[in-house]
Length: 189
Image 1 (cartoon, one colour):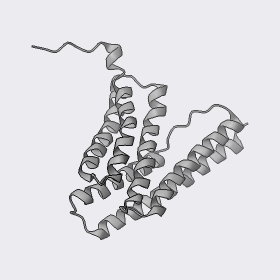
Image 2 (cartoon, one colour):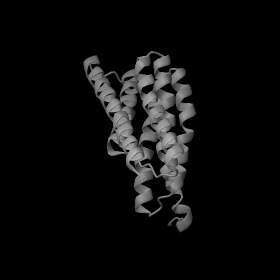
Image 3 (tube, helix red, strand yellow):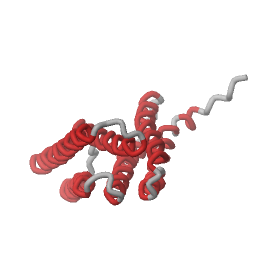
Image 4 (cartoon, rainbow, N blue to C red):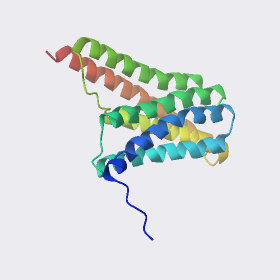
């Protein structure tokens, strides 16, 4: 027996549904970090990470890209990371300065976007390749830290080395955004 096919318009909403679910997972993920339920957090974070790749792939595959998805997809990542990093710092899994660096980069980007909008008007700011890579590194590092709580298989030197990579990537992508969008604001008529 075959299952009925989803209507085309409903199927095309699937990427946005996955993105929205990922956004909604941020609160329970943060709560579970604070409750030291690291195994559950790890599985939620893995599901969120997988859905991040799947929703983008589905949107392209189904020709279902949307302004909603373009805005909420990176927002879901930011909400999850901006919640998870301080929670991980609060329970002592990462240093506070790292949580502040990750959040600070995003604050600089948002404030820069608001300033650009105020000076230049509407814009379509797509994440840069370096920005996406930095976010990817931040997600991987969060997963690594959580994994170490459940399955401590890596030496502390490897975790520290990855922390250094995350710091360099975060600073580089923040500086890149400031440079590129600052230059656009100054050179566009």
